[in-house]
Structure formats: structure tokens, C-alpha cells
Amino acid sequence: MPAGNPFKLRHILKSLLSENKLTASELSRKTEVSKQVLSDWLAGVKPRNIEQVKAVAEYFRISMDYLCFGEDLNSSQSVPVRWISGKFEGRIRIVDET
Image 1 (cartoon, rainbow, N blue to C red):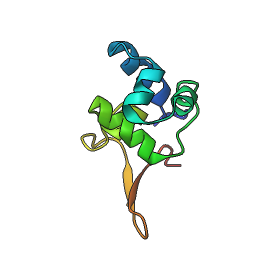
Image 2 (image 1 turned 90 degrees about the horizontal axis):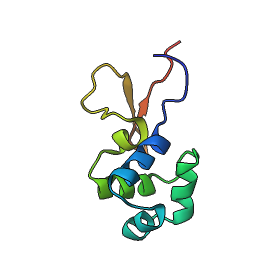
Image 3 (image 1 turned 180 degrees about the vertical axis):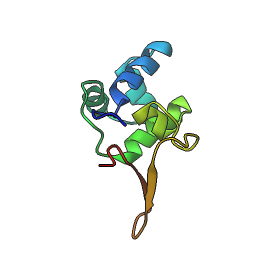
């Protein structure tokens, strides 16, 4: 996988807002994610709260993987994914396998 930033939330969110003729303010009211957080994401700041990402993804009826990476990792066999567990269970995406 090539080096670089695989995080695409900024571009995908801009596209979703445009396609749905929404502003960040309107999306904020509909999802209860603050306008400042949405503005940060649109400026390229990575999210810090997974619940906010989930709220936006649910509003648009897309997966969080698609919102953040532009692809649904559940359906992609070519993207290496590893599961971690413990107190929290989660999935990490491997960007560079060197």
C-alpha cells in the first residue's frame, strides 16, 4: 500500500454535504455534532470522538469505514485489517506493513 494519508473524511464529508445540499450548520443540528467539530473535519483535523463519527455516518446511512477511508472495510478483502481486543474491542487498519 502506498505511503501517504489514507484518511479521507475531509473529502468525503464535503462531497456528502454537497450531494445532499446541506451546510455544516444544518448537519450539526441534525446529528448533534457541533459545528466546530464538523468545521475541523472539513479543515482536515482527524476526529477524536468515535461517537461523533458514528452519528454522521448513521445520518448519511453509510459505514464509518466509508466515511473515514472511502471504502467499506467489511467488504474489502485486499485491505489488511487486524482485530484487537481487551477492555475495548476494535479494528485497526494497517497502512504500512514494513
